[in-house]
Length: 449
Image 1 (cartoon, rainbow, N blue to C red):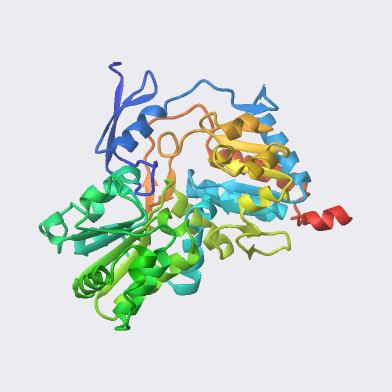
Image 2: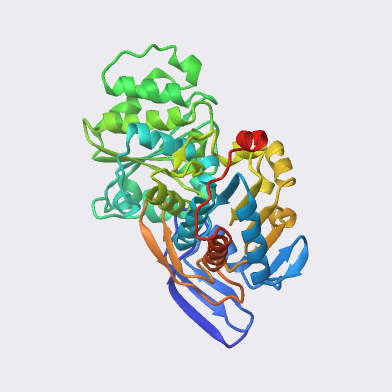
């Protein structure tokens, strides 16, 4: 190991939505890599270890090595010419870069969408229709004596959610930590998280809505038919016991994952859980928070919301923002073959989108910004190499509970940040459009003209 070491206290891990900001990093400044990450979970340690400085071209245009400036010119030309362009991703970069991405979408009359549309998008829809009783993770740590995890596996996906916030830590009003909490886990199968729970409800797949609606009925004192067990796999006696516990706790918290939002019912499931939270507040205090995956996906929701009024899937082709999931969300636009150019920011849809969407990606010019080589960057017309946020780049991110956190980078990268590249693209697109915003033409209209 080199003797040229740098210590970075209280750094932030941007791997998952917990965005833990108590990392103590040791950096080998000669090799430009992080050798030690104290307080990090197994996922965080891998995140810091794997993000060194790779020797890659600053940009590739059609597979040919190019400068960043040449890549910016090509990307700006693509976006300025496009008739129905799309900007997608945003969840693994800073809020500052996200803001510029929204500005570009507005300028070119395109669509901006985030990875929320393929994860907690249904929750976003439910928030608009039902509302949200919310709290910070710190409040849950200090006050919650009952925590219900629904449709998630934090032990593997968010390890420190258990140890830092919701299960084992001692809090101001939870002085004995785990001993003072009742932990409930609701899922369709046993996972690595199951042993943590005091109560495990194994529901039949695709029956979350029925379980939630039965709980709502019981909270309101309504009769529930014992046949609920045949439909959901959970007996009426178990549901009645759970309701009694939920109504008698001092402070309860629902933490729900994609196992709830991406199954049958989708936004109705999220809405049912949020409505159950409201019902329980007639008796005691309950809150509900989605457990988010990507490091700054919550920031993406916030930035797009405060810029447009909507959290994701926002279209500007009429000169004002419109929100319509299913019409303006990325998987749907690509699968229908409607978009004719796409800028993908810090995401890899070519690795996990449906086949029809990936096939359309291969037919249109793709602009990719990513610190690593991905399947998406390999098929991109323009592929930029960028610095990694949180490790090489400072800025702002949002924890899954909507708390803003400032990043403390560990070492510099020779590559530009997402914000720098996007700002250059924005300025060049503005020049190409003559300073005027030119609304895009929807595909059907373009075909007829």
